[in-house]
Length: 245
Image (cartoon, rainbow, N blue to C red; front, side, top):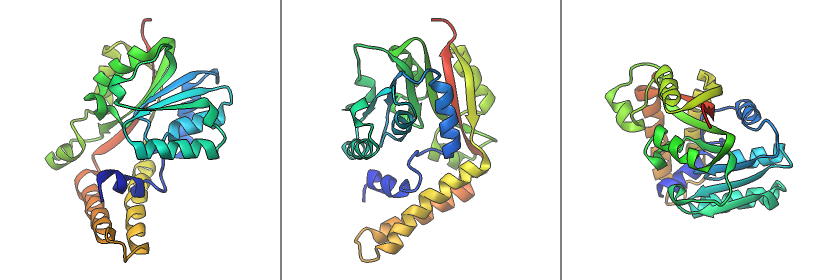
């Protein structure tokens, strides 16, 4: 079982793939889409859940998603068809850094995918390349709520604290106009959902050749969360505008 297959099973009950409640997602999209008729781009869309929710909420919206995963994009296409928004969604299978469009976008999304560009500031540079004047960026990034252990840094990445993250964004020419810091309930709910879903699949399919691997992976990841990063890792989403266009 490869990483993509494990991720799909782990996120079966949490398709946003980030530690956010449905209400938080709805509020963030509301701040990011003030008109409701914007052109939206998700750089690293995965299964397209952010775009699908935005399209369902705003019938005049048009969206495009970019990802390298054929499986995830196929999932997004099926979901768009079932939710009746497929005619307003275009999906591109390619490296997000190589994507180009003849028209700019009013909102550029990148939530929990900044690794695709090498970190937060390179991701914002890429978003700037696609953004129309007066447009907005919705970005979601890990943060440290307290000093992390070396194991946590090695496991999750070299993040900064909330204040430093916002200062870096502002120094790069962006103004936060709204944001959300994931609550303890959201952070815990995400981890329980991920590793619980993976373990449940394994228990429901005891004869599957991948069952033992899935159950072991769920146990290891759950232990890493509880012992290595539960008390230090957090997540912030920011709605940004360019300080000067």
